[in-house]
Length: 301
Length: 301
Image (tube, helix red, strand yellow):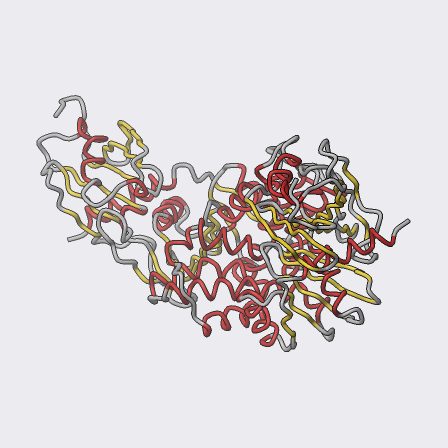
């Protein structure tokens, strides 16, 4: 226990590969920490020690609520928080409560969302969606969250009405880094090749299986530059994703979460597909969503 | 040198991961060997020692011709054998000749085939195709060679007129073994799930990106059996391959090379797609093709 921390709650983003925590007073961050103790490296019984180690000197006499989102609530996490089925608001109290051995804090895990048909799940993104809605409560349309597993989310009247996950980021990493295509892949980029890939996949999505090995063959026969090969592969996969998700985003307002390069690529690709998307800074959305969850906890009976 | 081997030539199938050799008298096998010294583990200067080690006691006073096919002729192989552009017969003498330091043998590498538009390449399959044609010289239609990188080959009047490579086997291995889908994959099989995957991908190939993560979600939400998940993934990828290659095989006689389980799966999938394919034992085709190459070498001036 220290005297110099006056946190009244703690926000935690606990994913597969990392653990991030913020000491909070209301919606003000007074300290922040992170570690590599993601769900992926923790077995049963190791979650509480990992968290305590990170936040120990934020804790005092008062029992602090910890609001946590992400894979910490998965079956392989600290304790399984059952999915909430859509349509529903991204957050809903009460959350999944854990009573740690350490009496200086309690943990409230935010459940992920599920959709039965077509089957889909998310954990963590619901909190980002809540963060987005806390600043844009009237948004109606489609939210895209680019990442390893991209989420396409339909929002109506503050509710998540449906969503789909596409593994484009993971497939790109496997094909560019581990398949035979890796021999022809650079680390750089080529805007033109990216656009060619997007356009080809949008126009002929069924031809994608043929387009993959052609990258290797063009490298051997036509001296396709390695940077262009990498960019075209990315374009092909993102274009195929857009072709598959078109019924969701066609004619809908689209917001891309995340100010990073990946979101810019999706904006370019959507533009090539004839749609306009605005890119919203997604950096602080998880914390904004956790703050929203803390308010809900305070308001709940 | 030994007296007990009367080989008059040596057949070699030298791929990425293995080296196979046969001591031959005409078209009769008198001995066979193999090792793990595939191209993938050999650097410059290591090819001749690897081969000599394997065939040393087949060699004698007479300089024997070695006929070799596969990745040994790639840029990273022993010596690059330039591709022969289609349309062309699968084999054509003279082959790419190497003069080893060891004077007891010479090496003739069979070049792979290339196609400029759409760009594609093969190395090794041309020899299997020649082996197939040596027993069925009048076949006209499409030859499918299932494997890690499947080849679809159009044959007319004994010539390869075009071909395409689809990386279905490698993509299946990466997705089932290394992506997030691995958590829901069994080692077994389910015929029904395979057929469902094939049919779904043939009917809606553009939806493939959505169908992948659904395997994981159905495992979590609907208790999709791990064996069914694996079979459906295989079906989805093979179905997508058939949708993409349909212009090649539609209305053409189809021969599937290889009597193994993979060829049977392609036969089932083609049947679901409305096409009949006959399955031909592919085991001895490489050796038959190498034997055909030896005859061509003898006939060449």
